[in-house]
Image (cartoon, rainbow, N blue to C red):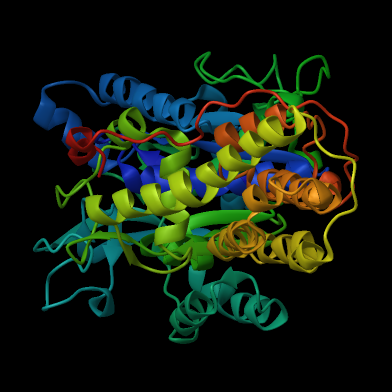
Length: 535
């Protein structure tokens, strides 16, 4: 079964921040989990390089849009690499193949009678690159996202007949109540549709930085149509030469290495038939209208299947404000990784902020979760369990029956985790696993194996307890692998576990007798003076 997951593509008008890392990690967690289930996965991310925000940023910096795009796109690719993200392709909207794909689809839509010329007059936010209706501005003339005063603009454009898709969109939402998740975002998008959708600008005549309109090169494609189509165009050329065509910056990873699918050697360039439509598309809630309304209508106009699900997550907040380059309150994820490591960042984001909701992030909460959850609960559990195996059983996992007291804690765990992932409940899946980590810690305290070790007559009981702890660690490490690929991967290696598929996450299925290997601390203590650089 094919599983196609996408992130939004990120504007290159500034360098990446933690908000970009948030969405990208979420997609990576989904992709890794689905690979564990044996699915054929394609994971796409990339950069959005056309439009007014990029042109304006380049002008302020005294450079060209192309040079700025080249420079900042590298930073986004570097972030993907530092996050340990296993994307199969990294698209740039300045790729020639993407531009050709955009032209082909828009020409198809134009030939179908879904485009006409007209004049736009109204509000426009240059930072959102969005034409705003009167209902979408606040205080009369302010952008609700960037809080800047907007000016009325008048411009001759080509328009997409979005209004013609009012009924098809309503029918889509009626037939597929999980098309947009979470439910409150579904209701928000449906409310927008039922309020009456208006035709939207498809082109810009006042800009030159963009993909030329195929039937009228005096115009360029409005950046949002250019960007939305990346999800489709990427598949048309992602398979060629080991997925390495996007400015020679893409790499392919083998599933065995925890990465994407193996594309090399297939001779297949166009992967559209294998993977379209997307299974899950992750977006921030500020771009809901484009993805939940305009995007499916655009696909309908092109006679293409619509995505399976669009999941709209909330904002990461600092002092109750959305993290935004435009607002100047961003957090540098590179600093976080440098101090605490990638796994710590991945864990924090999805434990601290329920995926789909807004949530506050801070240095204090990061330090607390790192110490109490990663270092103490997970790291210390692994360290003390392996230490007891070495101390009491010469490093060999006992051959014993799994204790019934622990078996009940693992009954149905993998199935519940899979259910959360099927509903794109990333944080809920992590919470489900973490409750079992805590159950294992409580079991250690309750059983006190260090006391039993003093009694030669309790050897069988000690064997069962130690085996149960190792098995519990093995199962939770397997389930945590999408979240904590480095730490959980090292733990599984120390336990001699080769199979990291979901099929192996069955408590009591691994026989004893294996020799465990030494394991360095999973989450070592971080010096206090280094912590302010983190978040």
